[in-house]
Amino acid sequence: MLITDARIIKQEEILPGFHRLTLAAGEVAAKARPGQFLHVHCAADRLDPFLRRPISIHAVDRQRGEVALFYRVVGRGTALLAAKEKGDQLNILGPLGRGFTMPPGKGKVAVVAGGIGIAPLYFLLQELGANKISADVFLGAATGQQLFFGSEITGLGHNVFPATDDGTAGYQGNVVSLFARGPSDFVYGCGPAAMLQSLCRVIEKHKIRGEISLEERMGCGVGACLSCACKTRGQEGNCRYSRVCVEGPVFPSGEVVWS
Image 1 (cartoon, rainbow, N blue to C red):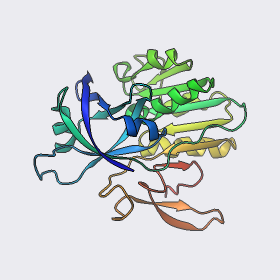
Image 2 (image 1 turned 90 degrees about the vertical axis):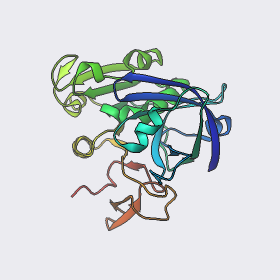
Image 3 (image 1 turned 120 degrees about the vertical axis):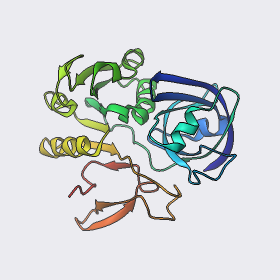
Image 4 (image 1 turned 60 degrees about the horizontal axis):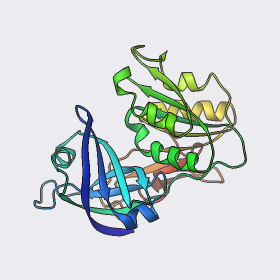
């Protein structure tokens, strides 16, 4: 875990309210693993907002020492982050949390992303591609305009299957319904809680192995404040509370208790 003042290389507004930020952070790039996140100080020159913001590591270029974040502007912190420009410094803590594991064996791999859930999954797809593993990627969004990075994902060697609520691109309907039509041996997922709950039901029904990345509000990001605790199931079936920032954000699909 590092505290770094990283220089902003690029700030791109992909769509209104959706930004991709690239940082020069060589040590972080060397240590980062797919599924981990950074705790970002969005306003180093002021006390409001006081807390850092957890943002998934979206992409990494280890050779160039660069780390990218993909985020949506939803409040004061991310609005301040979106106002930063090339050359500005950004204080980051990380990489933090438990990330994804590489798929076992040579079975068929699927990746299911709902909306902004593609943020941590893109880094995973980079690593899968680097290991010569081709995945079926199910991208879901409200409308075709919000199907992010489809051509880039194809360029990494993966197959993309889009789903939109309004039918403007690909399958019309829920991305989990599209995923459930085809067999897979190992599944990764990230997106809204309702989508992940539905995905976990499909995984359990078909006895597939899988991992999901949760999105939770966090205070400290290092497991001390317990603000991000979620209900999980232990190996013996007993329930407990796990810290998303430390025991997660990635969990085995059968471990999260949704009710």
